[in-house]
Length: 480
Image 1 (cartoon, rainbow, N blue to C red):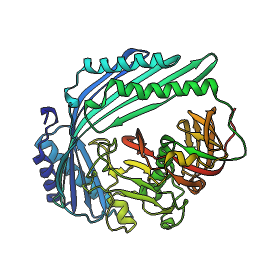
Image 2 (tube, rainbow, N blue to C red; image 1 turned 90 degrees about the vertical axis):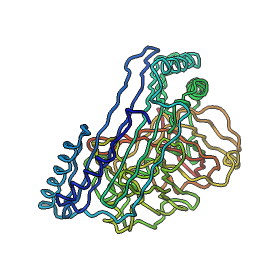
Image 3 (spheres, rainbow, N blue to C red; image 1 turned 180 degrees about the vertical axis):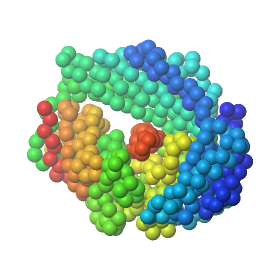
Image 4 (tube, helix red, strand yellow; image 1 turned 180 degrees about the horizontal axis):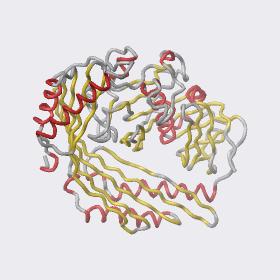
């Protein structure tokens, strides 16, 4: 392991033992060390480069239902023990004030170490490597369509963690992540359109093959330009739609993942990120058609939201949020699973840094594949629209009313994909969306994203995705 990422694991166990000595009924320590590396290109010019190595630890404790949390970026014995004492003092003070005492679910003990392999380690990548790849991509972008401006960001990190708690769990991990994010603004005469493209994985520098990344991005730009030039107005009245994995993924994330976060359901997120139209009594009720299922699975190999144990030391597993159209499971941490009497957490606790609380989060949220070939989804559609991806989306604070505007879209006539359609608008409620699905494709595709939540805000890496799906009897919104 790179010397910059090494952690003195004994400090974590010392912190846990100190907290117990001070009167904590439960204690945990989470250590992190990470190297970050990246670059911005704006219109071909490097603007900001981000490089750094950071490390620290947090301690969380429970005392009589009160919680205490303290963190430090000074990983020395005296300082770490002081933070453990501080966390216990905070918990004792909290216990004297709270009406609803915090309880955590009982969880098994885990001893584990795991790492994502890299052919070329992120920590070994130099600025010259980054500039060479981004310059190649930037040049290809300028040749794919007329651009008014272009912005490229490369972000990568290698993060090492160690978690220890008073249940004797000890879990180490090392996960590299790399992502490219670009915003090209396409201009053709007086017409302007913008695309936001993000791709990423949990792997090493080998992901940044300049040819493959250029082909992906330039295809998106070229198709956006084609739709700008040739797109016709979308049909009115009731039609059928086929949605591409990018649209399917953002719908799964926004209208299933977020409203199924148990802390949001309980009202904790109301003043921060909003509420949920879902409540605990809706468990087991129908929300969609029998072919609609949604999964959140952090264990997908090399996925952008990958992990095998969450930040509370709980072993990760796939979470089936919607199963055959029925509300099947919420996203939990140890606190919410205890409150809702779920027995054990389903490993949804994540924090974006050592100095942040682990809260309920998504990982890789997607519609489960079905049994149709993509071609079969178009068969039988007399009049419809194929919305392959989106340029804009909106959803209300309760995650009930949603709206998606297509970027690359096509007319469907008599089962055949025809010419481009300009900016079709899909606008409907969440139950209407999931109930309109009548066929689901076989092939899964994913996009990388950064999900925001919490106060202070925590952006975390996730995948959104799914297969192509078909919606029946949809009325499109009205565009200008």
